[in-house]
Length: 304
Image (cartoon, rainbow, N blue to C red; front, side, top):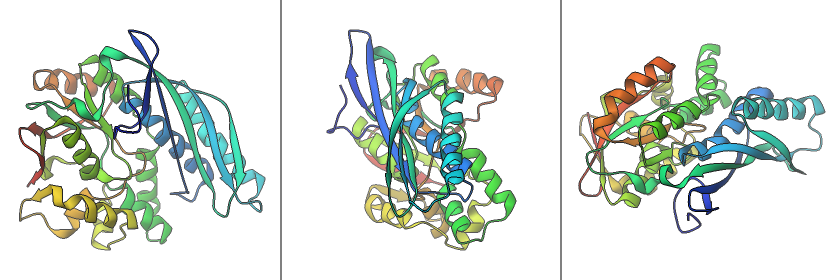
């Protein structure tokens, strides 16, 4: 149903008339200094692709690359962080594969089941839908600041808390309220993944910058220009599809191209269901932000 020719977050194989198997994988090098937190973030990031498709993840395999000189207590903590985050998601890690490499790398292969009539894709956005985001932005610029030893303990705690957070409740809410357009915000940035959604759906997207959430230290590190290389690549590739209000400065524009790790879901929500969904999210303690709308046309517009 969904494969190499689609820009979606996972592959989808039809099982029968009602069910599909969703399969995805992701892994990366450390974004924080604590092995346990690195494992937890990597697992949350991998599982998020299943949530973005509206799947219920149930099984995973570890993908691990470790330097031979890495102390075993460090590798054990990475795997423990991943295992405990998977358990929180209701996912069983049934095995995996490990190789040696110069730099640690960790992630998961994730399998999940989805109901075909409820499945979410990047091509499901419709004109008139509201755009809703489930996590703030600013993770890439902050994790680079961590690598450069510029981040304070409170900055690290804030970004780790968000990156470790599962998109489980946000995905379940989206399914409950009939959302069919979704993606998760990771390495291609908010605007990069939004472009994929707009192009796949044959629509335009309009964001209101003042409504987009950022972690509290994001602007500080944007001013210091601690953006990862991927953020500049995102801007180079996707900026031609984006028009900005002239009042939005360079730093804030770059924050919208900032490469995220384990970011939130971007959901295209039927407008008539938005208020009820936001109310239910608040009851469940799930942050959601109304950040824009789906419009006729093509490309992305960012208003102040």
